[in-house]
Image (cartoon, rainbow, N blue to C red):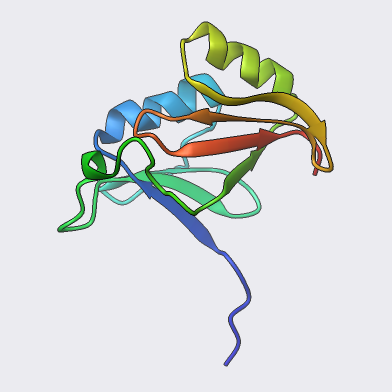
Length: 123
């Protein structure tokens, strides 16, 4: 028996359509052709990324402002600065300003549920 690595990633969110629209509109993610009724799956690579309704017993609002504390979620972008500028214009909280690093230009923002997401532009 061998585990080969991450295959799917989903964030539990308080408002499914708000979060789906956030990732679709501001980050440019495309919805996958098929999603289960309780989630929106995006056509991301190398693994699928989704936002989903909370599992029974989980209240996303109870973990604010640090949803996902201890988990580092990084998403690749072709142009991190351009993504940053779109998010700033939309009033999205920026947690760390763009800075060069080993994974290219990186910055972090807070999504509508308080998840901190880092964008980088070097694969």
